[in-house]
Length: 382
Ligand code: PMP
Image (cartoon, rainbow, N blue to C red; front, top):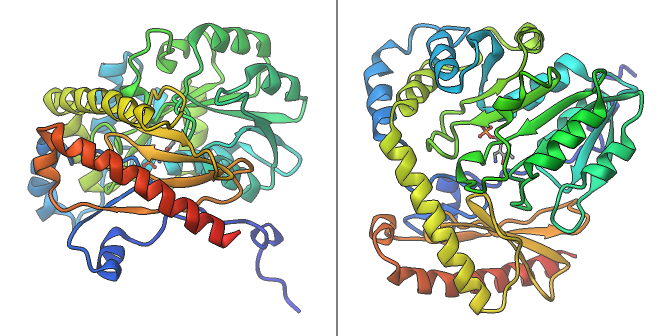
């Protein structure tokens, strides 16, 4: 018999993004739903991005600029790096896959904090590499443990700060000590900063500023969260020009579509939308944290736009996105993190919830209710 498929696919658990939100709303008979697990922007996209998409719509018969040149130049100016230190991807998701395609081979080891964002493990395994899990210490990335696991075969270390799903950061000083300890022949260190815009802790390191000193560092960012462009799929990696050159060799020629490129470019200039998003998330995160604390829930202080809530009688913890009124996530997070279940939040009028705290109390109650329902659902599946 001809063997068609790679054996690695047999025991790979695909990333479960859940039903499309529209399909789920239909199924539940709701007019509007907010996905509880995707940490999307509650304000919606930048209006400047929407206008740019409208302007560009008549040109979608033309292939996009395969090099996302204008976007890389604008990003480079803003970040203080050269455009050839940036590759734009079809979401940061694609960049995670590009790293694996460009660098990982059978026999390589890739150290992945456990739990963390699932695609790190999936892409490494797909590339034939061996995933070496490094358990979190409580809710924190344990850099001492990661360091102990580095061997000659380690090809990459995947770090996430703020961490998904733990919401914690790797403070600057231990991060620098870790990078120094890896030395000049370091593995690739991927620092995923998808949620950096929601971190107001002065102890948090801006990965971009470290690139000059650490040439094997790769920083990931995305337009999905802060700019509200999740549906267009635009993320970027910043690294040394040599590293970016390797990624460019393995990416598809037109990996980022026209609408994504113009929307991201416009969003970069929309400081008002960015500031409004950050302010909203920080305020509502604090509010939600306080309300949940009052109700007896515990969670690590969040540096992201979601919370990870310990559920006392559940076999693990749960993620709840803040601001909960608009983008609550509630995904089961069993300690082994082998599976996640997701639940959804019916929501009828997002706009009215933006301006007032009053609906928040109701929301908090509902979050607690949704956690209970989800816990029961999770148990039922055990
Ligand atoms: N990294 C982390 C930590 C994430 O949580 C996500 C999205 N949930 C991504 C990367 C992927 O972002 P994008 O939408 O740009 O593919």
